[in-house]
Length: 147
Length: 405
Image (cartoon, rainbow over all chains, first blue to last red):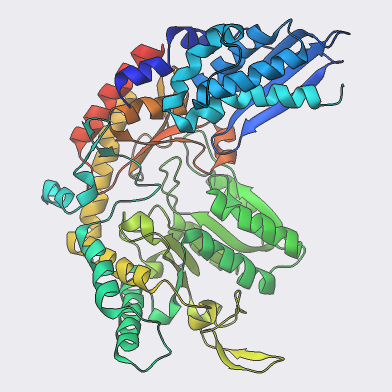
């Protein structure tokens, strides 16, 4: 790791999201909810989702604790998927996974927008699970029974 | 003491990581190995390797001699009354599980209390949770005060005649607190309780004597005291060991076997089923010889000096809060919380500058909850570390503070 690679990992946009997370908080029921954690490091993210009758994400909020990468990635995710269909969010999740794992080209790079700033994670394989934590929680929330 | 020369005994430290000289500050997780230990392993595998206690050929006898000599070295190291009180294990975790299963199943029943503390490593917590589930005994914990020491008033109240076992960490791996194990074991014994001391962080760091502590059991891991991974020690007072049933069954631990039953050997063999880690035991003896040649009191002093230096240097960084005792004796580690960044971000940052630290809950989740932190960053020291390395750590932490704030 060089200091340059480290600064790629912690770009100013990412640090901004970790300091001032967007869509932070809970959505009162009825909504979908899931809790995600990385037991090895103790990072936690809770995601709350409200779908409209067209299966679009009408609202999404998250809370959590953990490293700058996990919290910023979750914050950036909520901004991106809000208003999207659940299918589009799932596609975005797969594209995002490719970016952070360096696993081929994303199908729709434009849709990812500033999420591609997290591609610095590629150089830090042990941090992939941090970047994916919010997305994993979102996936679980969308499969969870409404409450 | 020429600590720089001691540093040269550790080949692994002579390398760069990410373009910087390696600064290894993670010895509480696992220590590095001096050349003499590595050579002992090589010598064993190149000349003496065979199974122990079963063949009459020359190699088996040499392997057996080396293995049993290692047991005597450990007995001397701990001031045990006899080498037969030394059981070789895989590490501290296996030692605790052995007691929890073998001693626990024979001695615990509903209504009994296992008394432990709120600062135990998961390895001295989960085995007791399992033992409590199996036997119906209750597990209680002595609370931890804000300064990182145990609540001794609460201890006195919790210490009732129902307490059958006191299980207690000597030096906290997360706080650096040194618990008054001698005083606490004496009080527990006065009430007839059996006592266990987790010495994973104290063995090899400070002079250790089971005679002085007065405990019935004590466990430590070889890999934290310059020995290889995979070898550890459980000390048990013979009067207690003699009355314990075996835990693992297999070869080496039996006298006679029929298809329906068997009789067991006396301790320690009763608790060492199967082929042991022979090379590991020989490596452990080499590590103990190495540490004793330097002197445990010298190592203790050096460790305290490093910890004090770290308290002063790191303590002056804005937004950095050190957990555990701020004055007096403490283990050779400093665990801290930074309000400007999460432990994993700090550890990643430091790694870029060649500094190895651990960030997270350190296998003490209840303690992290107690201090309301998601985790801490821990810099832990050993005989090969220098105050200069701590100065460098302080600089790198200061740069992290500027970057993340």
